[in-house]
Length: 242
Image (cartoon, rainbow, N blue to C red):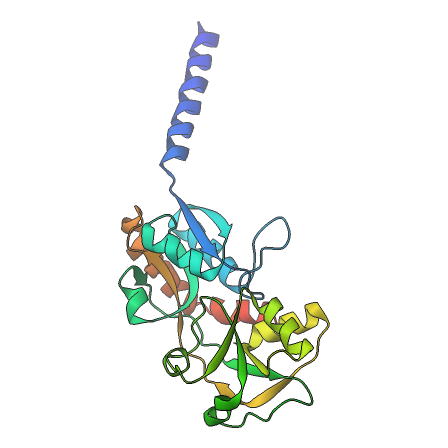
């Protein structure tokens, strides 16, 4: 009798654990590889932004599924509710129609213009007018730069392709977040100069799709984000990946 009772209790406990596990939401995180912020190389996605999201998930009590897709595809998935979270985005009016921008914001990151050692001098915004500028598809840099139709922009699928074009002399410069530029030049064993002119960084954000079925997590995620910011986690993660 006692053995039957113990067996019944074990089965009940296992069933309760299974139900509890099913109740834990799984959020899909989408984005492109952008080291040191988003790193997909290796068994487990990591990087400044992904490590932050993992800590948020622990506090909120949810699972994460990371999917690597190009920026334009990631935004389309967020618009359609096929993904839940995206991190490292600039705030734009168009994106705000389908994304919740969580507060507080993440630290700004300057965008730098890389040039070959014998390349053009870029000391002010007006110097860009006569250049072929490499950009990554789907990326936003600043409202002025993004909407300046007079600039000649050469679009690549990723920054690695843009940097190869720059090395070959097919374009004059590449605009890229500074931390990502440093990382990629080390990885690709390339050397480019950083032009004096830069696009001063704007706040970036963690975003939740307005079409996500997990809207109830908006407030808990913001609370956890505030707690991590107050604890200095943002700065610690930036320092870890320098």
